[in-house]
Image 1 (tube, rainbow, N blue to C red):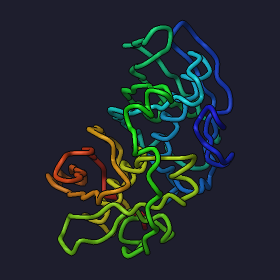
Image 2 (image 1 turned 90 degrees about the vertical axis):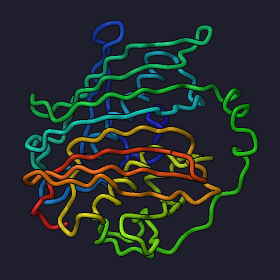
Image 3 (image 1 turned 135 degrees about the vertical axis):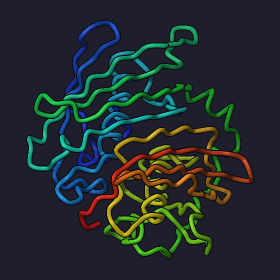
Image 4 (image 1 turned 60 degrees about the horizontal axis):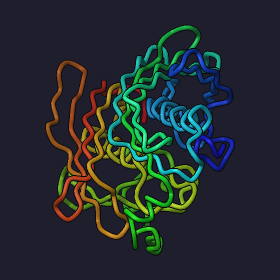
Length: 288
């Protein structure tokens, strides 16, 4: 669990791994039918479970195959993904095979400091999705030097769930990541460091997967009420998303071609870009 940066067994996807060549690996994993957060919708696995599988596998291999110390910080610069929904059906075997190929490796001395990971997720011999992420690795000592006082700041207060869960495609109010602004397509990120899946271990900023999920919820709220399943996503992280300041999100460039939606979600703090997510998806007729 530590190697995947998860604290609860039910949140861990990888189960085994092996090296296929110098920088190519196969990770075996498991997709539960009832994940505590990335739950299936209408008989299909959540596309973001596939994305989380990619993320965990990349982190695991950094520690296990490249001897990255466990207290090293993984900082995502980008994470792009494409899903094949016909291979995300629930009811197939829960096993997944995740092939990870690393390139563009950089080192600081003997320690790995950066990499690109190209990931392919397979189920029953079929390709369920692919992704590419770019990651920097920072030692605990260097991280303290870079972040300074931010590592010591108090945790944010808890917010009441002001946005109905159904509006953002969730079943539980505690999983809602948005606060209303009163302006269409504009939201404030709700920070709940007590969330047992999204915030595991000490954090001094909002994790990238939380930003991707918040962007997905903002997209859903914009075109709902039917379920919004992002079959493709391009996510870029420009700077740390700080706990101490409001993070404003805006949905723009919304377009519909046939049954397929495309839109951009941007996040800003103090007028500076924090992240950008561009999603393409069919608006499912399945109930949210």
